Image (tube, rainbow, N blue to C red; front, side, top):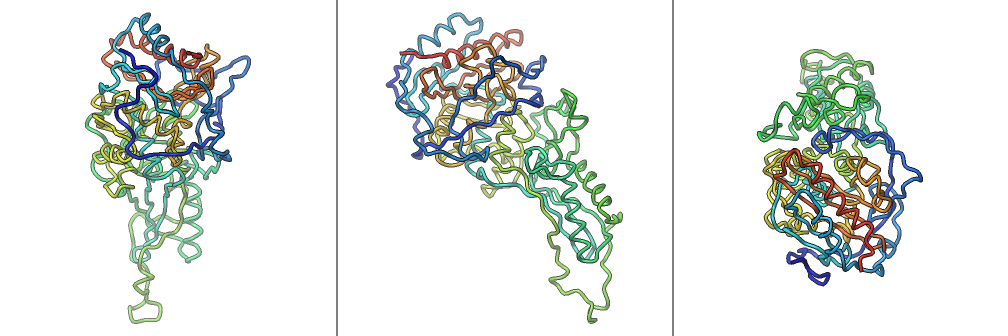
Length: 491
């Protein structure tokens, strides 16, 4: 039996959160075709054209876009009526659906009242909706304003420059682009700054080394398929890479990824350092020095490695948004490693999944949730609709970095993996902010929507073990339910 609006969720948040922050979601309509190969279907979305233009609804979104944050009272209209007839609307869609067996939970974003629930506590394979957990954990544990640093160090005892990977999977090959997320930090800029620092120390030649020790253990999960590297789905997870490991022209709709992304980035840096006027020798060489008792002998402090230069990534909030909008598996796995490091654990594929759950445990009760990876590629990941919706609702009322979460998701009819969905529904297009999840037998959608009366609702819809030839029908049912919420003046 479906719950009445007065029913409260059985698993409450462990930590009280208060206040609501808000801002406007900036939407970029161009260049949104770089999507997760397993989160869209073969028919790639083209550039969306609408007449008239779709208006994007405001949702809680504090700092990710660098906008001024209005007073908390302006975030959501708590006087807007709570819909009471959602069960009728959802059941009507489900009765006409050709695929059965959905897990669903819909809540009021402010009050946390459960408005509809069906099989909500059954854990299911979530696919890329897993990234909701990963993004939430990164925002909470690392912090939305934190940046990741890629640095160079110089060891005068061997005249060696070391390029040190710092977890930035979105490095650019050229100069840093302050206005970008992918390419915010550039290896050409790092090489130029490194060369300037070396020249200031009268060093014109040295060996080069690469340090990827930030991450440990295996860099490729045993549950992934190596053939998916060439498909552009995943790459070995290393703390240094350009464009999340993609190779080939950005003009192509589909690109493969590298088998050795850190090595590729190192090769680019080497080339740029040479172009900046530094001669790169093949092997480390002892530094020239007079006899240890002479006036020119190096002191112990002078012989220690020193930092030469540094470039910083976009903020964690912006990187989380990139991972969610593009459903980028590589960025999500790197974020999982960084969550582990932020908690004092090794940055590794082995530690990342549990670190994500640990990071969220003080904020929400995740019940039976189990993660094998932090991107959603593994069919062994298990998350229930109830647990996902718990995180979404916590984001709506959060007053910390977690409040960035829903605003970072794709926008219906406009961006990322929702570019070609909700385009024919005027109320849903621009009003749905949600993370998609798609594997060959799985479709999921989790996010938020402003209904026709101005009430903000959060939802999770999941189904797995679907016949492959019925997955499109399952996705249509999901979209029909969310569209019904957007059009709901259900009282």
